[in-house]
Amino acid sequence: MSLIFAVNSVALGVGLAMDAFSVSLANGLREPYMSRKRMCAVAGVYAFFQYAMPIAGWMCVHTIAGIFSSFRPFIPWIALFLLLYIGGKMIFEGLRANGKNDEEAKSLELSHGTLLMQGIATSIDALSVGFTIAEYGFFKANAASLIIAAVTFILCFIALTIGKTAGTRLSDKASVLGGTILVVIGIEIFVKGVL
Image 1 (cartoon, rainbow, N blue to C red):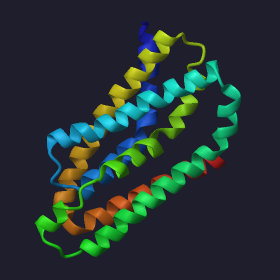
Image 2 (image 1 turned 45 degrees about the horizontal axis):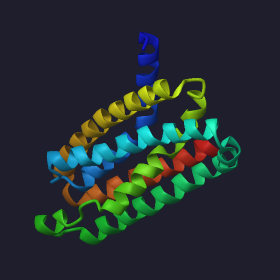
Image 3 (image 1 turned 180 degrees about the vertical axis):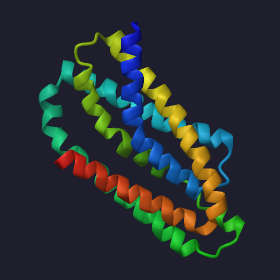
Image 4 (image 1 turned 90 degrees about the vertical axis):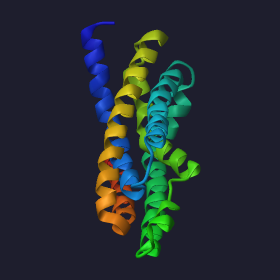
């Protein structure tokens, strides 16, 4: 692997991880009592999807490119729907939880289903990275995807830490703020994808 390849993969990872970073920030705000083990698991889910999507895109280019091309216009719509749903749910729960005590606030933990939907929504645009790495062989495409995943993991862990710290200070308003962030991210992905 060359230095240029590594630098390009890291830069690609940073660019792709920004949506997951923002969602992680929102999750940290929402769940200020999250343990380090859980933070690693949450960041790991985003990293997994940021690894899997470029590989899936690469495979599509090398096998079923026509099907993927017809699916591409729907990517912004899917991300918008998922993030509006998750963000709206967080806002609703935050407003409903307003004034609850710490034990009740702890019950607003991120569910496994919600985490998986967030992982898909924030990484679905990474499918198109498969086109940019299409000239790579499988080993090189896999290495690039692993670097993207590592960068995503690190950035998401940092975002969770920042969100958790701010969430502790913001208390019951954190879930509303986190949900609002997700809704804005969904709209931003949609606008970028459609225009």
